[in-house]
Image (cartoon, rainbow, N blue to C red; front, side, top):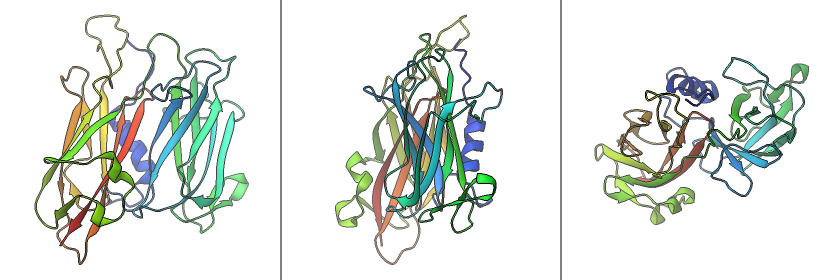
Length: 303
């Protein structure tokens, strides 16, 4: 059995709420404010790998979203060796290995690049800890040196931890494949478009449709088994987020023994709008061991 501690669906839900569920009645899948949704670890030279060897360079990319597709964010993150602890939310054991910060809001997503300690033990727990301010709000100096936001709003804390490669069960990032809405394929080229004339469209109030998500067949890494009851490969958790309309659930589990790595969710377009309106869908998949992928698709809903 792989001895690295994984994160179950309950913990992922708690982390998502800690990062972005500011309104108690806000659905977890709704992008109705600034949300820190995920972080992706990429080893230099092989972005599919999510566990660096000692001495390798690594980048952690954060997924931060807001209702405005052109939103910008101020942020501050520290990369470090995590303290030895039973807590799932990591703390730094010493000084930061690297710091990435933008005091003023910027359009580029937060990322932290650093070198995994060459003198560290393989299998060491690494962490990136920090957070962002709400869209368009700058960083400020808080009391006692704490991070704060210039308008007095809450600093949205975010925490990601992962393990360096110990050689027993190397970890790679899962990867998204095709995404469709009923028979309509939503290609990756839609992820950055905002002009409704260039995007696929659906009619307002036209009833539920199925968003189908397929993952790369190699997204579930093999695991070390100590007996026949242990899973032979990872399980995955797909999370769904949307800016317009309603989803009937927020998560899909892909179990280790499922024949296909896929998920689906029912989306109902909004019932009313006076003009064509952009709808954004954000997808995150995690393997519970530090491997992550995320992507976005867009379409327009029209009267």
